[in-house]
Length: 205
Image 1 (cartoon, rainbow, N blue to C red):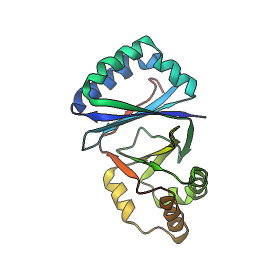
Image 2: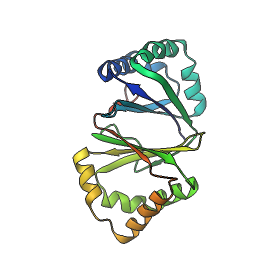
Image 3: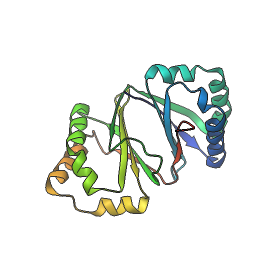
Image 4: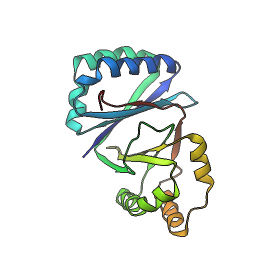
């Protein structure tokens, strides 16, 4: 069981923002209820994305209600241009072991799905073949937002190896499965490349 909270916004001072997250991890993460880890980054265009994993939705909400958490976000919000957007994702699936702190490159894919159940089924069925064909892909999570938006977070060993893997021709069965996955999106999905992902896990794990 897992719950994912996604926060997005536009930033200009990514260095200051990373320092703020490093401080939160050192000084505050021990107070976060049921927090399992976070993957955070800023794209080349300044788009900020944080994917925070919790054991339950209740734990995420309890953490958000902490006074110290509110003060930290109030101070951190000054580093953003405009409003931040928060997505609650009660329906989460993991594949190939889920999120991986050892990833050197992370790609976040977002869009609206025609059939989320079919998406889950295809990923489950082709997972063994995908693991053998793409050793550069070392984990991932899929999350369905309450709004109907879908976010997949894919973890790769490096961007170079991920791009090389993209160029390889998959075996026929996997090729057909991947083509069907793409067809399940309502319009082209959006890709957010995190070339310098910030990985955080509970201290001591």
